[in-house]
Length: 197
Image (tube, rainbow, N blue to C red; front, side):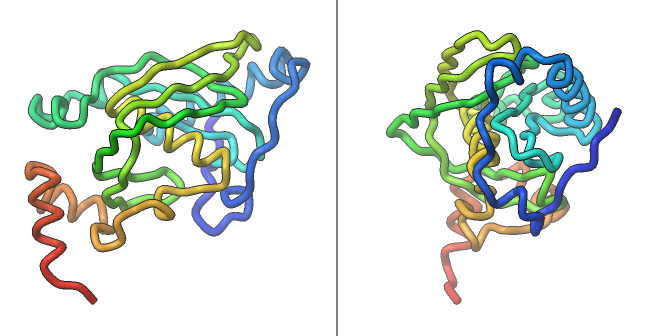
């Protein structure tokens, strides 16, 4: 079952989500919810979906960067963004530790459709969380996977990428594809820093 995705302006996107108890994690209701979230994320299509994005203030997100989403990305861009397939998994009640090195890349969101911007994120993160069985999991991630985790965990804390973006790089995804997709991040930053408002 596909779920409606909340759009920017909905209150649930701007508040910290509630942690789940072990009883809630192991319930059939949560198992069903995760399956619906997976279907909704894949249909969108997206690489992650947090519970607040479907109107539920829960510390829960699903993540998957499928091979078919990478087929139209050049090998150079995959290398630059350190992007590779990530199998489907669930994070519950996550705690994140950010590495020191930061990188900027273009980012979008299913709750702010048709737009994107450059966002500075930690290149490496460590996430301690629970999986859908309530087991403790530690995730070490770099590159694009690290970015996905940070983006989804931001959702669980009431934060959107637009709160972290470089505002002069905010644009439609159509214009990004038209003018910047094949160019480097350095080119984009250089072109947009010449004039300030």
